[in-house]
Amino acid sequence: MLRFRTRLMLPAAFVGFAICLCVTLPGIALLRAQDSGLEAFRKLHAELRERMEADLQDAVKFLDAKIAENPDSEDHHVLRHSLASRFSDQQDYQEATEQFRKLLDYYLEHADQSKNLFGAWMTIQSLKDVADQSGDDEALRLAVEDSLKAFSDAPAESNFDLLLPLSQLMVLKAQMMVEAGEATAAKELVEMQVKRLRDITESDHANEVSMTTYVGILRELTGDERGNDPWRDGYIEQLDEAVGMALENYPESIALQNDFADVQLMMISTWKQEDPAATQDRIEKVSKRLARFAIKNRSVQAALRRIELHRERMAAAKPVASLVGKPSPDWEVDAWVNVIELDQEALKGKVVLLDFWAMWCGPCIATFPHLREWREEFADRGFEIVGVTQYYNFRWDEEAKRASRATEDVTPEEERQTLTRFLEHHDLEHPVLVTPEGSEMPGDFGVRGIPHVVLIDRQGVVQLVKTGAGQATADAIHAKISELLGDDEEKGQEQDK
Image (cartoon, rainbow, N blue to C red; front, side, top):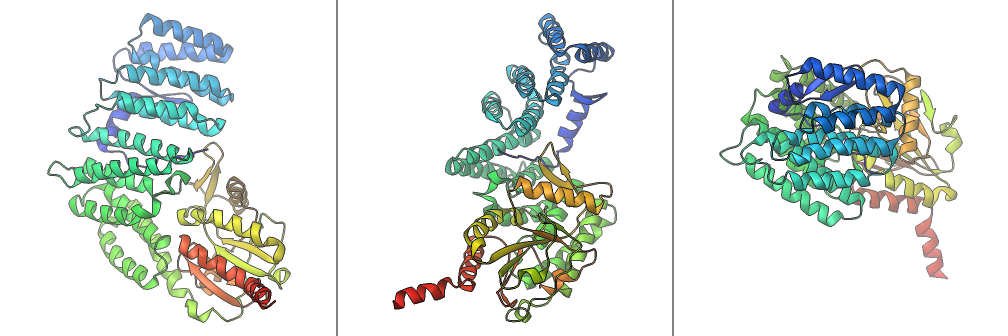
């Protein structure tokens, strides 16, 4: 089942449009297209809400009748959102999907009005949430296809505000195609859309909105969603270049300042960590560049603090060369997840792979299939994987099936529960240790970026250290595991016979 997360910064015009459409009512924010008759709208919603409390099916009939009386009133149609949400809360996903689809159909029937593209996209977001909960995304697939057909003539080339929802629809379609086994066609679709956005940003008509959309779509394509696997690595450098160019062109844009800071933090902490010198150089350059924006931008301030923490960790980390061939440093354990209790001594005589990772780390998530495969292949021959992570103040979102950073403090117990749900969601069964606050264990094992693997032989001696994701790295780790478990020796003995 596809998990699609929208994290794009909306252009100002889109935000303004959305604000104009939203009327906050108890329990739900409703899209609304008209400012006239607001009081009548509120009364209608209040009556619908009372009927929903008494009998949902009666509420459906009531709203259908009201829409039949005034079929062109968006005020009436958007109330289907309330109905659909209530059905979803009651896990009646079929009825929820039907109500959202009827709302979408209204927007598609009025596709000649460009503003309805935003309503269609927001409704598809709701359909996506239902699909994630129900496990059935067929209605979502059809909704995306129908929306792209209906709005194919939307004047995005002259109205850049329309670039964002159209591009989001394209990305969602491509991600779903990957899930359906159509990776090649999906990649072609993505390449076409990215080229289109890049050409626009390089034209004389480019503006901040088009640049924000271009950067945002590249961020979406390099996110940790499984649907991004065929192209994620290929767009990392393009994203890096795009945010730099965007900030050069629009240095006062808060949205682009935030994009630049976020991308640089990701480049420093998760991508390209196999070259510590280059990472250190990047830290020096971007820190100076971000410092002037941080004076007024709190998001940039936060990113700078995290970059500085990473700089400190890198400075404290032991060189990899000093680890290989030496006894493994001691572990520091605050708590265990996926196992009641375990210690370093209990694993003596086994080949152990320490995997330093985090829930927010896309490249770490990309290595999960390898971890599952290696444990299945080698577990009965004296091999074990031990994950190593720390507290990041993350909380599990059961509806979205994902972990995210919380705005309020999360207790260690709550975060361990989040880790448990996260591991279950990704079918990871190996033990995971959580280090104490301020632990020196990452530095002792030379961690300068994640994912970071340390392979320890049966005698407790470090034999391999690898940082980063990618097939070449995975192949090197797999070969070393086989060697340490005696595969090469056994093959040699068979050949001698």
